[in-house]
Length: 302
Length: 42
Image 1 (cartoon, each protein chain N blue to C red):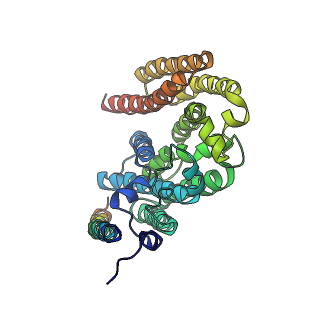
Image 2: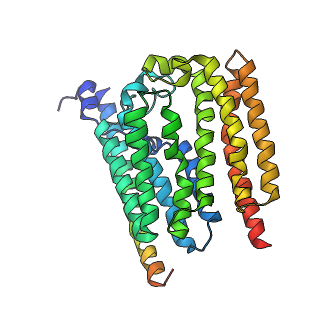
Image 3: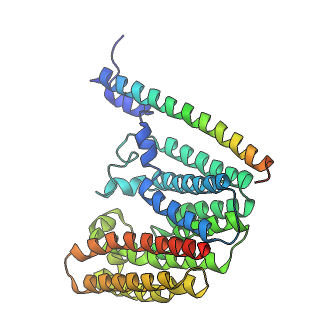
């Protein structure tokens, strides 16, 4: 039997590895989503069976992965243009678009149904809303149309603590909204730091990120303003009695450092400080939620 | 070259099938666990 030409094999597709399937779930984004969702679940008033709590966190993780897969399916054209994303399974030709879309839809439906059956339907509805918001509002509607894409679209990334909270209580409380607000106002300076040093790639792909549309000066100003907004917002869990003075002192110091990073970006014409701020923004959010979890747990033990 | 690609493709499909089988077993275990906890009043 004669050998098949390699072009035909490429067209047949189906050569994606397990690693490729893992990669389209955006595991790095998923880890932060899972952590914030877990903290929402842990600080919510009430009790949830540990097995059901683990299933709720698993559903949040799978739902986030589903959003990532569908996002990669839709954005495969611009991912191919950007250096940062060109090696993803779809633009690199290792996976067929239909495979990614089918995988994402199965995971989205599966995670929502399991959440509803195992935990409660309020948490399941919030999970479905999160996935739908990320796919339809951020990815399909806003991302290619407005520089406010990540401001409004950031709501999707801010919803996981609400899902965790609702998994325990069956509804949404003020504490959950405070956690939502922290991530919502953290998202713009976090993403704009990245887009400052990736502006050329976004411009080539036709994505109207703020540095592309309004320039680096305006972006840096907006980033700085958002870090000021984060001061009262990050203190809200303390004001609502979710955490004690250790949390308040810790987040005040962290917010001061975050504003300091934005000031360094403002004064720096090179990419260096923007890269540093992007890395610090991840640590900043992680430490805020760690402090909240630690202080809340210590308070509950007292 | 083409037969090498075919071999690679077969390996990828085989490992994907194993992962899918593991996933299905995990799903069965998950539903069993959910049933136990919910029936136990959790």
